[in-house]
Image (cartoon, rainbow, N blue to C red; front, side):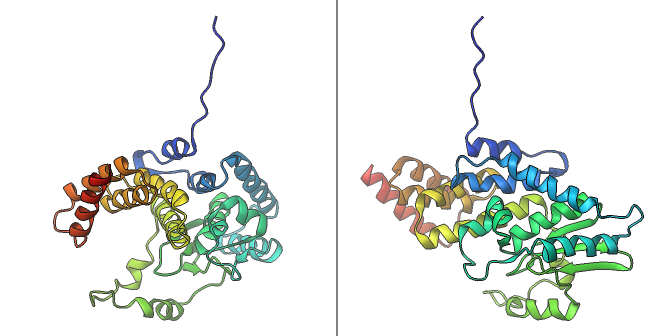
Length: 283
């Protein structure tokens, strides 16, 4: 009998399995978010990250009275997360990619709103809170349902935000580049899906790697975005552009041509077509 052989999935294959479409699109947010760091840390043990969170959740649950209401649960969670553990924003190096890598955030207790939110949400939902992420313009938020209504919080600090504070944060985004009014506050406070949260995390990393001209890591992020958002031709285009920066002419042409074939009338059509022509000439 031949010996059994096992193939270890690549980081992208692992991610692909986690975000495959399923009924209700109920993705394992914590696990999928934790494995984003494998592009920079291929040997990262994602299961250890999950185990670390399990230990924090057990620590929190041990403090909860059986009859604790939602508001008491929220207060105990924030006392542990922000008070005892000291989670907060990494204001000294806000644009470091490590701020998006959950294993690093767990170790340093420093992150950005969306990475802190993913950890906070895992604990909140683990103690029975009706909590969700909010993809607010400019700054990711979280919210929780308590007796008497809904509380919206800043995941950097755990601070509860009033309607006036939210409107003040929204002010810089009141008009978009086309001069259109921003959606009303009620629309902007809708719960973000796990897929939307992962996309926002990846796009944060995308901008960081592009600013640093780190094309290898940018390509890895784009591979994930194409898998996560298969209907997004813009992400396919950006993967093609990353391939082009790395000198991968054939996959660059394939992605960019697919973008042209499916986005007739896009503003960048001429520029992308010219790039495809140049790549063909260099191939």
